[in-house]
Length: 350
Image (cartoon, rainbow, N blue to C red; front, side):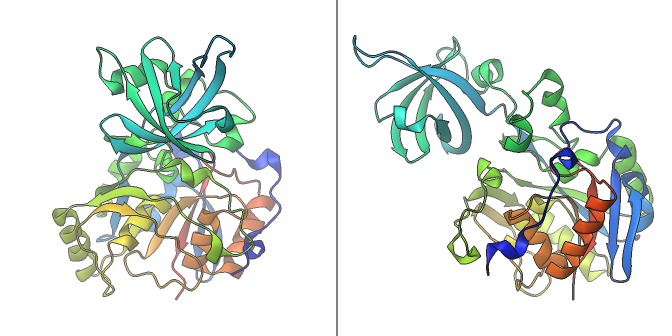
């Protein structure tokens, strides 16, 4: 399918640079089979039914953006400033990262990030490298907490630097399992009070885990979706969680995925009969129109960028023509887009 089918004009002013306060003051566009309704996130408990199940992502964002310098290779060379964004944990303090300027690195180079973290370049492939880190006497996570920065999405980072409030703002209330370099942003709208009201409405809740990689930020540069390669991400649905999801559906409840990350993991674990099975491993699922959804009935998600894999996913979920109309309405009504923006609640197109 041609990528330009998923293009639309997005005024720069509609990309939110900071979240609203409080979180549940965000706007919510409710998309049903018979029209659009402008609401607020705080209205969510009234829009879902007793017996439904809310499925969130409990991944926790790490300070994955690093600024350092490549050591001089010999007396004739100079140190080179290096920016790196970690995106894949390979185990034993070895990480895959996007780097700039990548051409200034080669295998064997040493890069120092602050006073407590050193990395050796194991290999380089284009704009990506594999780093082997040495944190000295402390743990890698402790060193990363000292020198790392919250990895804001490029559309925000190009317009402002990360600040201290982003450490908390770019983390959901569900965050528990460290490993993401990007937040599952639909979850950012929730407060403890909103979640309590959802549960009081008779709706269940559980969290699964998908560690979001920096590949989620990458634009689709191919002309056709068949030529786009998705980066894989690690996720897990336990046997107990799978059983709870299947029991909710068997009892007539709907599965409400909070965010595209939760949705992609649910669909990865789907067994084709409307249920899911336990899953633990890598997924590179790429969902475009024509995909048959098996595991989720509703999707709560933010407004995404044109030509992105996430906009392709919501088009697959609710229909391309319908979502183009939804986004046109959102632009006209000045909804806030992207990670710190507003949300929409989508019903699945039959």
